[in-house]
Structures are given as C-alpha cells and as structure tokens.
Length: 359
Image (cartoon, rainbow, N blue to C red):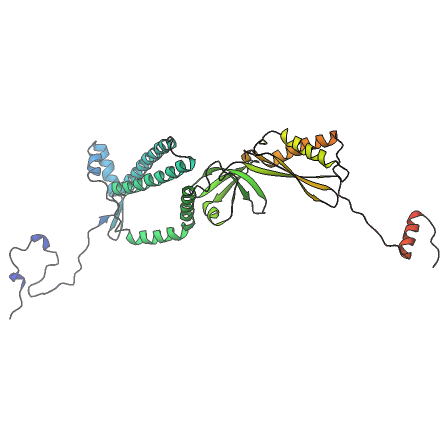
C-alpha cells in the first residue's frame, strides 16, 4: 500500500482551499499556522460607509481618512470611523429613547383608571422597557461583535454585579413598595436623622434608588428604598390621612376640674384644622406630684401641614382661656423636710447673725 501524494488529490477540490503554505511533494502536513484575518469590533450598518461616501467627494475623503486611522489589537481592528459612527448612533438612540420615554410618561399619567401609585409603577416599568429596547437597538445598529468582547464583557458584568448590587436591590425594593401600595407620593411618614431625632415629612418623589421626603422645615431626606423594606416605618396616611394629636395639660389642685374640662373642649373647638368628627376627647390622666394632669386628644386630616404647630395653636388658645378664668398652671415644686440636730441649729444661728454658744 502506497501513501497518496499531492498529485493524487481529486481534481474537483475547490481552489479556495489552497493555502500559501502548500504541501511539498511527499509532505503529509505543514507546521505553518493559518493567519486569521483582522476583524472589526464595531461593524457599522451595511452600506453605511458607502452611503456616506457617495454623498460627495469630500465626504468620501473624510470617510477614507477616518477609516484609515485604526487601532489594531491582535485580530481586532477599531477605526476612527467606527468610533465616530458609534458615538453618533448612541446619541441618536438616546435622544429618541428620551423623547419616547417622556411621551409615554405623559400618556401613563393621563390614565384615569390608575391611582398615583399605579401610575408611578407603570411609568417606571415603561421607562425600563424603553431603555432596554434602546440598548438592543443601539447594539444592533452599531453591529458590535459581542463574541470578540465576551471575556471583557463577562469581567465587566461581574464587576457591575458586585458594585451595583445595592442599586439593583433598591430598584426592586422600589417596585415592590409600589406594588403593595405601602407608600406612595403624598404620604406622610416619620423619618429619623443620624442623631435619632424624629421628624414628620411628606413623600415628594419615589426614585429608582431612593425616595425623597421633605419635612416642614424644608429639610429633604433621601432614604434608600431597601431601608424601607427592612426597617420599621410609620406611615401616617397609609389607610387614612386622619391623625390623632395628643396635648397634655396640668392644672393646680385648687382648680375647678369641671371648668378646666370645659375650657379644654373650648380651646380645641376654636382652633382651625381640628376636625369635628371624630369628636375631641378630654381625659383626666392622673393626680401628679404638683398638678392634676389632663390630656386633650383631637383629630386632624392634614398631617403634612404639621403636627407640632396645631398643638401649639391649641396651647395658645388654652393659655388665654386659663388667664381669663383664673386657672393656675402650677410650677414644679418640692417640699424639703430637715431633721433637727445640734450642728444644724448652729448653722441656722450663724446664718441669722446670732452668737453661737461654746460647746
């Protein structure tokens, strides 16, 4: 049995399979490596270069000049034309997506069958969908060779996963908060600063990363959505915006308690923002060390307008009524009883200017 020689190759072998490193007569293999042709990372849309170059000779020269300025890394080639076309395509896609997202936001807000929370949730979902489609369109329009960037894309995706896990967590938390309607724009909640001081504020905006809460003193808190999912929060207007306010009051033991009760009701009734229904309630809480302690409880329907200020208005009216009816608000006082002793008597006599007898 004889080995085949190159002359034994069938005559119907395609000429395209021939390589410069042709086998010599009697040679069974070649050690020469096949050189892979250069390939562009960004392959522009078919006919883009020709279409631009066909506009004029000047445009053709500019396209050729930009295409000739290229950076080659191994088998990857990136030209200046690719970079310019990429930036222009991204700018175009971003602009169109921004206008579409703005138009979709207006359409969603015009839906009468949705409440505020549902409109906000639909707005966010539509926005995410539009920008996802915009990204895919940009990739297809530019013609990015994702296989050439597979390794770098995997490393970049891993870095994004670790670096932005809080961001995605806040995004999902915001969507869940809107789905269960636990908070919505306009709700009044209690927020605390780093020192632990609590303040009441109104939700102004629910963003992708955090919610914006503005208090009565125009301090704006940005609270991550994830914190609202795991931490306790007081929502004053979750099921109803009616809020009960408590105002403790102490009067002297010599006061007419029936008159005090009548004046407390009068002060509440004559204060604006206090609801007639549910009715206010005056309770005698305790007989304290220095005073008889009452507590008046009343309701308001606009906690976003402030709670401390309405309590202050009730106290101011109550102070005027107490002055008009000679009701005393006692000062804190304590009685001190001292046991008599020889040394104490000497100190008292010295303080009174008397002579102290010799022991």
